[in-house]
Amino acid sequence: MAQSTGRVAGKKAFITGGAQGLGAAAGRMLAKEGAKVALADINLAGAQAVADEINAAHGAGTAFAFELDVTQEDQWIDVLEKANEAMGGLSVLVNNAGIGGDGPIESLDFGLWKKVMSVNVDSVFLGAKHALTHMRAHQPGSIINLSSIAGLIANGNSPAYNASKAAVWLLSKNIALYCALRQAGPSGAAGPHRRAERHRQCGALSGQRREQVHDRRRDQGRRRHLGDVIGFEVPPPRCGGGPGPLA
Image 1: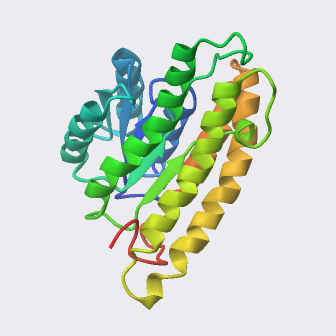
Image 2: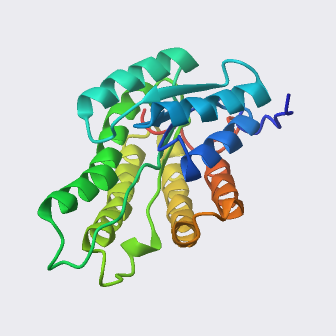
């Protein structure tokens, strides 16, 4: 059984797109550092395989798998309830699920445009909206939304992907400010803003690396590295700076 360092011991993380790639890498890293993880994916078999791998390395009850279509609000509500119960709380949300595959604007099917926007943007909105309810009782907490350098720099051939990832940037800032403005007491007023800025800086770094991963699917070393970035964006329980996402 692998030895956990305990850096984020006691944290309970919910990760979308956890069946493979970046989501699986984040789950492995957080579990290695002492957290419990809930891996949610439309591919339940894949998520369960990763959860089994994590449990074999760190002990039964470290990881859980759930089936989730991130575009469906009723499924978010149900699965977050189940994950909260399974892990004994929820303190970290990683909105990682996302798709691309669109094309030039004149030939892009409107149905595909809506699908990309729903998976990449609606999922972040729904995840944050419903996770915050559970995170209030397990603070301080962290919400990590995976964007991309494509949200800042257009490529001319992926209008839906460009637009969706740009939306994630601003939505993440909105969520950070929403939570910061609801901190209790002057001691917590500045802390969340500093954390939000750190998350934005990390997001730029992560976005660049995510594009590299996207271009080089077989390079698992890059995925593990970005998994490390996600893992270390979750502050240890002893780190303060405010009571958490919401007072």
